Image 1 (cartoon, rainbow, N blue to C red):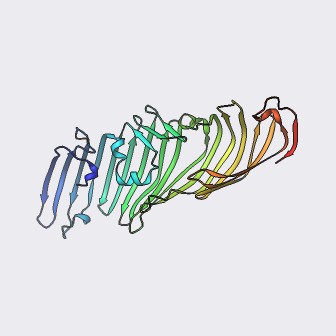
Image 2: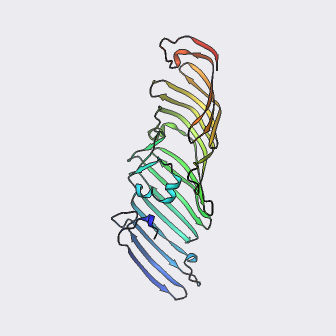
Image 3: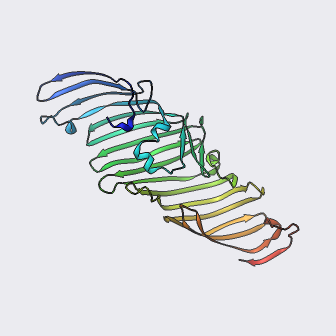
Length: 317
């Protein structure tokens, strides 16, 4: 049993054996295991397995269901796959429940799973905070094959927001994890309770996106590579320190690995219309360059270090 599963107490197993010595059949298989340091037997499998004539476990057809209850997220977070793939400052607390059905063989396994995480908390400082008590759910379709795992288009629910997720984990000498997130035009207001920006709040408007993320698991030093596009439609946000609003923000942000570019951003700052280009050279450090242009800039719309700024500037760059 892998040490990372942290099974610290006694396990329970019940099964019925039938068939022949050449082709034994196990039914009513019910192991109960204290999973990830739990004091209770919180992992329960109910299933069956029928060996082929070569009595190789990997070729035996299996089917059943798996229930994981009150799984500690802090313990789950310590599993090697998650530890390698999640950002170092991503923090979790609370617990999740997992309900799954599976069938196939060990090397060709198909699974459907429901993950409930309402009692959990997720934090990525400066970006995202899902507090305990907010709905969070994943309905997933997964298959296992000799090359790794595939996640078919599955639904994630976070609060009032919904999105589709798919991906794959390829194994071998250079394991890679890829994830794709997509959503049609949806309200940014539904995501506002989960956004943890230190600079802005008051989010409104619509977004749609189709983004792919990829990471080489053998090289934990390298971050995620992002590709795809994020489309902003009539977005509004408020600068916390000054109270000033940016509204009618429209434009497309494109991602190219570890950098991003936007060439057609437009928004209003008070009574001033502004256009912008943005080139982020390094998404891991959020460093980059931008250019702002306005045909008619009202100085009272921008926070100046000296008081009394008034008047208008034409064709500002």
